[in-house]
Image 1 (cartoon, rainbow, N blue to C red):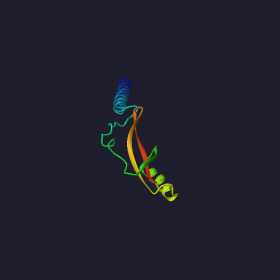
Image 2 (spheres, rainbow, N blue to C red; image 1 turned 135 degrees about the horizontal axis):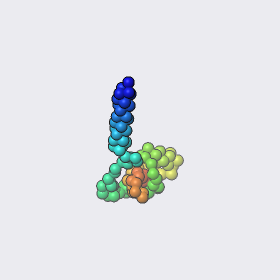
Image 3 (tube, rainbow, N blue to C red; image 1 turned 180 degrees about the horizontal axis):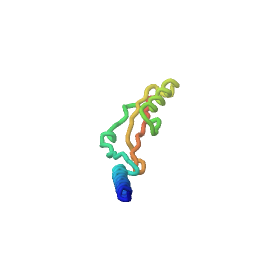
Image 4 (cartoon, helix red, strand yellow; image 1 turned 90 degrees about the horizontal axis):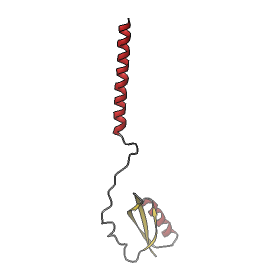
Length: 106
């Protein structure tokens, strides 16, 4: 009887060790703080110029839909006749952020 108990205990211990090793390996495979690697934007964004007659109304963080909503609001409120949204990646500290620039034609 004692041999069966020893064999069972060794089997349980071996299973525990195998589980610990397997768990540790999978935990190390995923970084604690996953980050998305982004390259700096190319020089083509810096080359962009607004159309003739358009002036910068404002810049803000956001998406294209937010810029268009602001532009449409200005047209319907007769603040300007037309608008152009231009998005650009800018670096704030160590993070790249999408910025919108709203150019308007008054």
